[in-house]
Length: 218
Image 1 (spheres, rainbow, N blue to C red):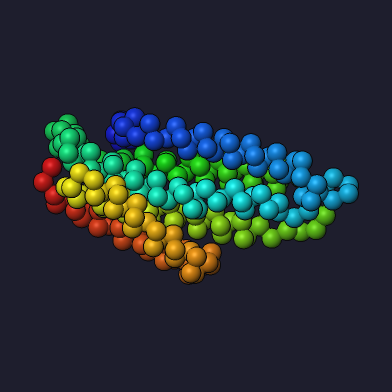
Image 2: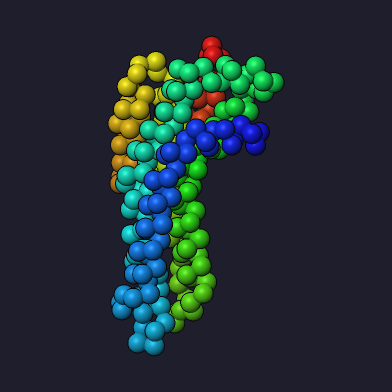
């Protein structure tokens, strides 16, 4: 399994450089804002609640990155089928389930590479600096969970769209169809209902992808 995951990571490594670079810039900007913005500190230099920059840092993975995740998922599946990669791997004593699991794990790094470092930076900041009054970190946690599920759903959509044999439709179609998923957050907000719907959508898309991958001719 580790060999399959490593192979999938190498195949999408070019797509992981950009999110790693963007994440670094976001974290540097986040730390700078929290350290040097006066409105984030009391007269004693103690942080006041949760800085607004922590919420603003999620704009990129909320608005733009889901489209890219969808494109990555579609590219993974389309090029796998067009180049007969899975057909070749199945000759090496492995199964379709293991191939698809490794592909999903590797593809998920495209958004976890952004979201996990952001979450760790926020958690470290909140734990290192005492507050004058107790703070409610749940809205920030809720935002992180929702954005993670949003990117997962768009990535799963891309995987399913990658089965289309048209040369351009899998990537362009998955990017276009990601817009209604993002609009769900605009309509529903960041509540439990939104998280449940995104989780249900991602699970349904992954299940359908697994069904198609298990029965399709490689």
